[in-house]
Length: 282
Image (cartoon, rainbow, N blue to C red; front, side):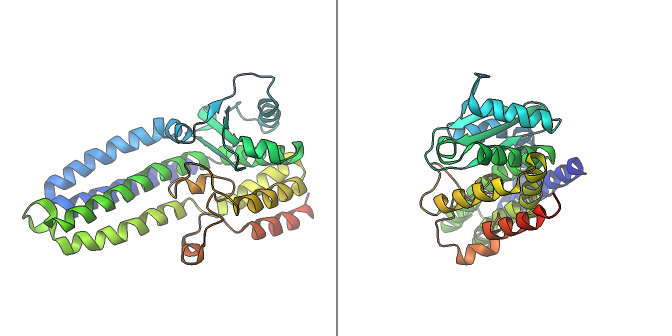
């Protein structure tokens, strides 16, 4: 089912790109957009995880005696998953995410700040959360969403620039009014794309972590600490396009208000409340 969802997601993004190309440059623009979408689909599937890890200067942990490596290895074995690659991000703000295209090509990254802030049980709960994302293939859809959301935002800026200078040609399909409208709409489309990486995946990953560790309280405590710290600072190099990948929104400290409509994460309060209900079942 998750593989079908991914194929549909890629097809939808391709259609959106082709429509943008047609609006921007007629038939020629549509052809260019089609070729670009094909290239981006290929890149997003095979290389987007490397891009995201490089963006955050993640360093792979190769020493099997490493504390985080051993926790991940233990949980991966318990979850009957292949051992993912483990990365540490040299960043003082505590957070974590998973990326990769499938179970065999997964990676989990945690910041140094998370290691310094949380105790062993809380770190275990966070890694179990990320492994749950791996199990449900959330990581592929999330990583692809990050690449395409960034590309759509870039195209919106290009169209806005083109509209200011008359679109660069006299083709009927390069109507500057249409281009301005699309330049406004496309960033919203990027936000919606991130929302398609459903908020419910966070609830599912929380539940998966609680059941894997048998300790919902540890995840509740970890989420509370991470949210509290996130309100005081942002992850270095964090972007709106990749925010949905983290266990806690790295922009929690910003004034959300209108952007709450496009929130990529459930509120931490709701997540903690659901874990409280889950305690009765475990």
